[in-house]
Amino acid sequence: MIQLNNLTKKYGKANALSNINIEINENKIYCLLGENGAGKTTFLRTISGLTQATKGEVLVNGLKVNKLSMPEIVCFVEERENHINLKIKDLISLAADFQDGFDTEFADDMIKKFNLNPDKKFKKLSFGMKTMVNTIIGLASTNKIVLFDEPVLGFDVIMRNKFYSLLEESIARHPKIIIVSTHLIDEIAKIAEEIIIIHKGELLLRSNIIDLQDKCYSVTGIASDVDKAVMGKNIINVHDIGKFKTVNVYDTRIEENDRIQISNEGLQDFFANLIGGEINE
Ligand SMILES: Nc1ncnc2c1ncn2[C@@H]1O[C@H](COP(=O)(O)OP(=O)(O)OP(=O)(O)O)[C@@H](O)[C@H]1O
Image (cartoon, rainbow, N blue to C red; front, side, top):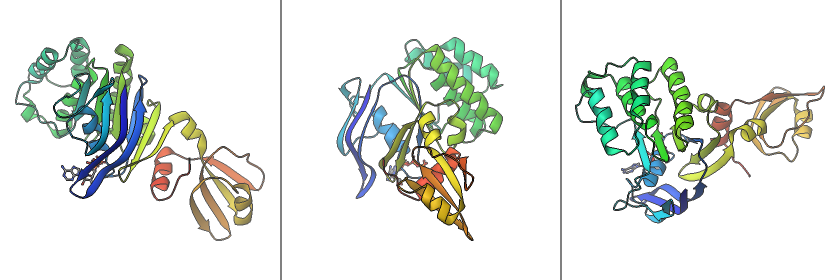
């Protein structure tokens, strides 16, 4: 449903996105990961038609996307979105007027769950509450593609957990492609099915999250035993601690034995190690 062919976006001479090729077709939750400035916002804005590609093409449902032809089936939710100064309940009605099939019942339910006062005006809300309102509008959207740009920025852990469970409810009520850009991979990994990593404007990795969790592990032991055990494996990072060593691996699993210890690696650590290293798919 989303197809990017050799997509490049330049700002001046700098590439925000370089030659991205990807297809995203299945209705599920995708996590878009990348360090600051990696190109995540540009990636999402280009799919929604808000940013024009410099080279290559973006197709949504087979139709070319650009500023003159923005795909109606895409709902793009960004944290910096600053609505006109209406009451929350009026913003919800407005969203319902603009979007066919907008799930008002779900939106009202979420307003209660987030303890928001529907009579409060948008401009009087805190940063986190404004994000909540934008998020609710995205979650209640029945558009076939919903893109969230850093939705949990400004949310505390309780809010974030509410958001993750509402994301699951949103996709269960109305199956769709949901792409969420975030830095908090270990949290979103509990509900997302696929991960897309962008690094310095390039597509670094796309993987099913369960496969990724299986392939990310560390091996610790005496340096020579570790070296022998990980020979031929794709090594992401190495820590030497005296005669001992820990190696972070992204590859098929190896068996633990009495000379080496295998530990699961958190995805957040994997990501931090990955963007400092190389990966060979
Ligand atoms: N309007 C713009 N004009 C010039 N450069 C831009 C513009 N928008 C983005 N960039 C540059 O393009 C690159 C990618 O930016 P982008 O906002 O897409 O990254 P990001 O992964 O979303 O970052 P963050 O996590 O910090 O929000 C950065 O180097 C950024 O400075």
